[in-house]
Amino acid sequence: MDEYLAWFLDVTHWHWFALALVLAGFEMLSMSFFLIFPALSAVLLGLVVYIEPTLDWRVQVLIFAVFSVATTMLGRAWIRKRRAADGPPTVNVRGQTYLGRKVRTSDALENGRGRLSMDDTWWTARSIDGASIAADTLVEVTEVDGATLLVRSVEE
Image 1 (tube, rainbow, N blue to C red):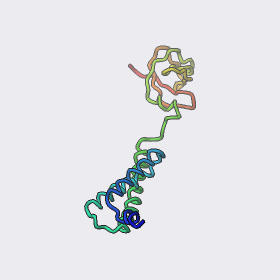
Image 2: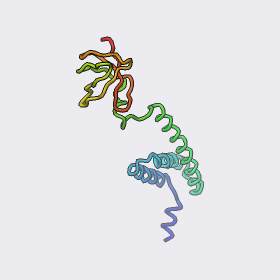
Image 3: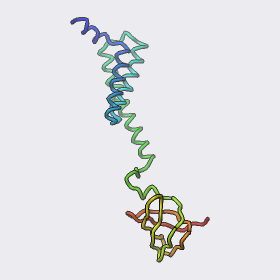
Image 4: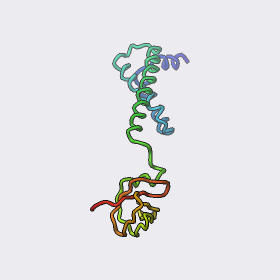
């Protein structure tokens, strides 16, 4: 029994690398971007222990805790910054994906109202200024109002 306890108390860099693999595996299952930072900390600590193998296991645990907090805070800030730079997601707002897109009208927009065919869907369309737009005119989607695309004619 003492040899098992000694194995746990004599922590080497391989223990930290194994912990990193376990944490990375759980991260893959959970996809939460939470366990990846302690996994990174375990890898870093494994490198530290590889360089300085005489560190006491208590000091190693303390360093792991500090590394985990630091990498989690830095990683969360980095993710937040990247998400802010990407802008709001448009995955579930299909009309927003058409902003800036140019298409030819298949039907005329009478009194500024009509419909457009974009991809495989017919959309209700409205010209921004309320002017009529003839059929086969190149228009650009400038705004989306619910399920209505607001368009303006553009020069070719």
